[in-house]
Figure: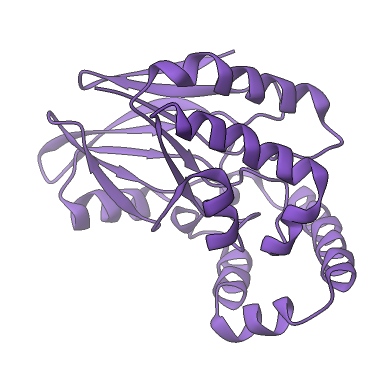
Length: 239
């Protein structure tokens, strides 16, 4: 079995190099896998499935659908930028939406998959905003607005977010060690794969006497990359 994992692509029409790199990945390396897991933040932002009317978004969905039709199983997980991806996009892309967190089994080892933002528990302000934005009431109110109003609001929130991030200590926006250990303990797994932090790497830790590992996926603001899990052996590839 060969599974591939990516996250934090942040696709947007204004970043053509990242888009072309991802499309080449879908037409090349990804076709040799049994499954591709996109663990959040496929898009820079997503304000509702009516965004499929935008030509760029439709192109992304078409590339994913083409991969799915070759027989590669395609899975999507919400990130902090695209948590409004819904059944309309999944149908267009030929993908299945995963819960965060989710577990998979490659026949040798059970693995926990997360986007990773829920592990950043030291960022109290973000966690409060996340609870608000994931609530049914907030999403119902937001999606009830016109497309233009939603786009204007999201762009304003993105600008505010950039300003807040610049003022925060970097360690606050990384994962909390206790949160990582708690997730591994609750799910009874020894391997965790996530994105979100844009700090790709491999971390070894011990939880309740068990040797565990945490793999962090690269973002695609730079050159991008992915994690390969083949025959139970993970390998991090940064382009």
